[in-house]
Image (cartoon, rainbow, N blue to C red; front, side):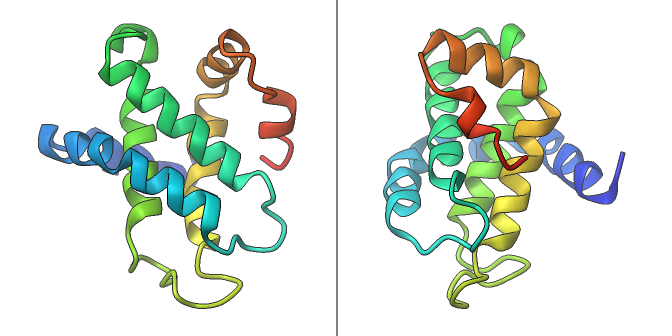
Length: 136
């Protein structure tokens, strides 16, 4: 496991219930942000990937997908959504062209680590998994 994956795994496992709830409440804002914010060059699928994570979080939180079936993907998705929503992280979001680069790497790490779960989820919801994962 590389350092990024270790970071994502560790951070996700240590989310509190309040932090997961915060991620769920942030979903509408995150969706809007993903649709409007300048994405880093080379990551054209990032808005759709963030949308997938948001939808997954809502469905698990709402009981449409069981926590057991979601496995660690649920907490990792919540972590990625919280990370995307933060304005100041490893690369501050206000830096033109690269501000969301670290966010993109975290999102793609979560999708890659949990590919089987997210592919099945995308297939169930008629989402274009092939396009969503094209840059992972």
